[in-house]
Image (cartoon, rainbow, N blue to C red; front, side):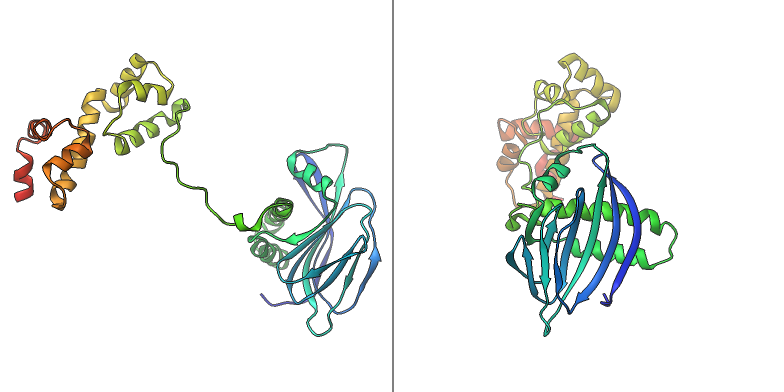
Amino acid sequence: MKEKATVTSGSVRFLLEGVVMHAVMVSYRRFTKIIPEHAHGENVYEIHYVTEGKGEVSLNRKKYPLTPGTLYITGPGILHEQLADEANPVTEFGLYLQTEGEHKGGELLQIMREHPLWCGMGRDGLRSLMEQILSEQAGNLPGSAEKRVHLLAEFVIECIRSIGMKQETEGVMPPPEEEFSTNPVREETMLLVADEIFLYEYRDITLEEMAKRLGLSIRQTQRFLERMYGKTFTRKKLEARMSAAVPMLQNGRYTITEISERLGYSSPDHFSHAFSGYYGYVPSSLRKK
């Protein structure tokens, strides 16, 4: 992104947890001079996100280094002064925010009020959001004004989330679930849950366990399966097992004994009997084919 001085005044209004926020000024500037010590009044917050260069900021007369990725937030009454490095001046994205009304908001606004002075590393997505805000601010595309409102709200949310968060957790996806949730589900998702069960849990799933997953009685579960699939639980489970058996047989890596165990059958004979009854030929003939 080409760096240049950009300052936009004129309030952009958006809601955050029911609280009216005014982005009174949005700026993107390179600072080659000292910003003298000053503080702002009630309900005013400034957000500073450094993109390039280095320098130093004094917050309530305690100094903090500024490097790319640094985020610092100042609230009402916080003294702040930014010192310049003439050889490598700081370039930063800034928001001047003012809250309106008596509404207290929720968890995000509580965090912001409890941390009127904060300096640390911003979350990974801030740079991208900043670039989008500046792009929409400079462009004339349809819907730019509306999109900028949403982007500003998202940027503020990500800044507040940065407060107190350990950076080593940034961008880390949660571990995959080992098992499906056992919480009862709403009716509109029952079919999806049933599909997942027959796809992945055909080995051991019982009618009683499925009923528990769906939050239904056993009789209600039977009626649900017959209505959705036109088949009984026993038939659907058999279909799932047989569908899984075919690629394992074709793969050639597994013995009949291993396949029967993977499918949940008590013996290879039991599996072979079920397979031949379903397909009309024995498993070993499929392997030869």
